[in-house]
Image (cartoon, rainbow, N blue to C red; front, side, top):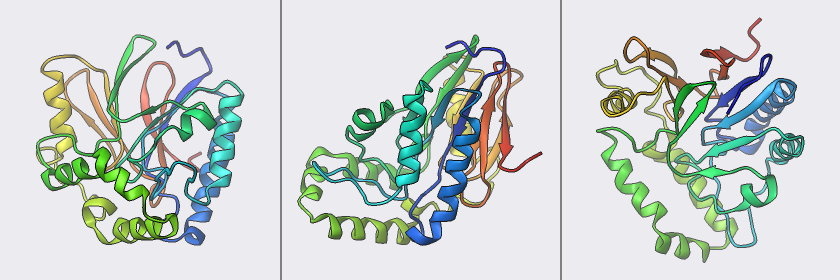
Length: 253
């Protein structure tokens, strides 16, 4: 993809809309929608790296209630010809066609490689990658198993959504409550994952979410790991101007 002069590629992650309640997350949703409206003039593309919602499960004919402002704005942007790419996170693993069919947004369940202006990117949500997080990796296999999803669909949506929201808050492996402190480069498993990837192929940037902490960490002289932070406490996002990727904070002059 070529990023024209005066255009930018934007990255955001971990909004967790709906948490801890729909009412409490509404101001955050309005900020996010206002940001989307602001960047639409110079956006060459927008990457959303997962956990846009605190819970999302698509039944055959039902999607979770709410998020009208967000979904409407995303539809407006894609209708205007701005490409948007979505990477599922650990809170919205169960996307199954709605974004593609209704919003014209491709959805990725695994990290992907992209190139912008000869700059190489490795992009994903980040959950389940690296040498640690073994408990979550086992849980993810259960959650994404087709049989598990089939049985879950038989729950009435009112029960299924309420149950998922309860565990989203109570289970730290899902909620991310443990992802709020910098562990040091040697213990940051996504940093270790990126360094191992570099042993076999070069990337200029590794871009992830999931950790809820804005981080920019050099991996070597020419490769950089960036974690996007979140839209709960940090309101940070990535912006690639065709030459460099940097983190910005909402409201920064």
